[in-house]
Length: 184
Image (cartoon, rainbow, N blue to C red; front, side, top):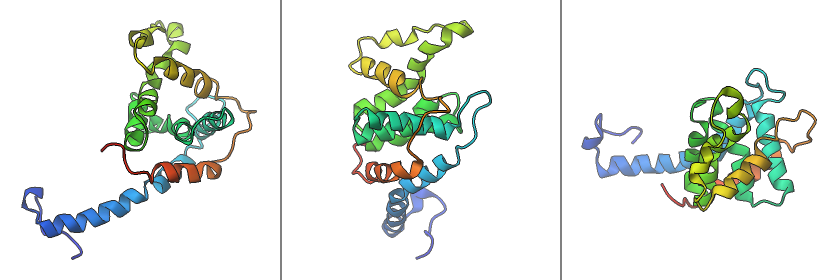
């Protein structure tokens, strides 16, 4: 069989879905390679920043590595802004959705919420409320998200910072994305 027999999913057979399952498992196993390929193309910057999106991500991951963070958190730091290109208005939710099956609840929440939490650094300059994050002050990962933004996001725009290159992080990304999913 090279193609399924159906044109509507409701008409698929067990054989069709076993055939597709085999291909989908192979495709899923190549997710890390697609992510790394995508990241390697982030060598342009949003106008005005001193570093590219890739360099910002590499600085984030390098700082997490140098601070002794877990491999999961290092990969999360590397990928936290992966949504900037395709989902600029909800980039953190996009990144969190990519990571969700492979990371802990805590890491997922941090990445998902970092977009809101990082507004602390600039919202007041634009007439916004820099304290919007305080509505989550009783959440168990509130302080961890503040720490993530402080240590691995807001200070990662330095053109003189010596970060590790993407190839250095590739084995970590591959290990995280080869985990048995926490959830689907």
